[in-house]
Image (cartoon, rainbow, N blue to C red; front, top):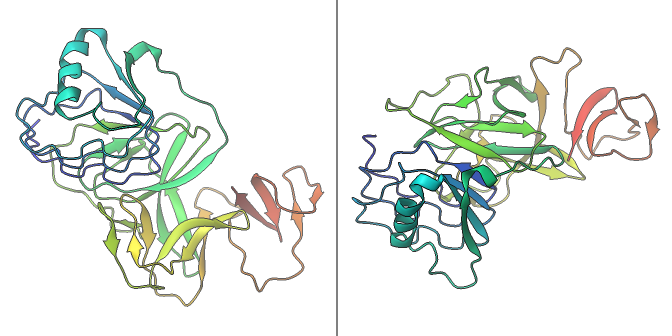
Length: 287
């Protein structure tokens, strides 16, 4: 690889639980400062012999605040990876439970469906089977999402991730070209925590169990997370999927009254349940 700078590559990716860098070639990288800094949910990291840090001269706080992390590595590459992790201070932080296991020991966890956003301008990523990455176009009321057909998130593009496995592994894709931003995509992102104007942007979240993009009252946009900058007076922006002819919207405003809720079997519910509901005639995703 010709990459030399990975400074803050996964900086503050607090929602990232697993990462597969087994095809990563870091042999020419000199700067790894803050590479996994504040990845507080990262529990599984897969590496191989391409994880070479011999030329790294800047490697401050690479794993700071990363705890309870297991590194999976092919047995043949274990010695080299051990040395690389030692150089980066993998075991130096107090309170960390760490281990290095054979790559074959790793198992995916089948958990409840999850909804998340992701952005990275440095590397292209491939989502795992069972997870779908979406880009979105604003129709004036909702963001209409379309799936990335090949499952590859080009670097420089923010996406919505929806899937049935909360233990997500994003595989790094070899990509030596420049960023290729999808012009129609209204999802934006930043690589580091960035100060912003309060009440201007929309960030992804849930209110009353309903997932949507809500007007953000804070003043710091989170690293590696998507946000919206739309010309609308609404306080929330719903979600629709382009391949659903019935339309899916997962936001209802507080002003709406007389809400009727049904499950997908047509049974009326006292309140929304996790997963897909029919609320006022529309399919609604509830976290």
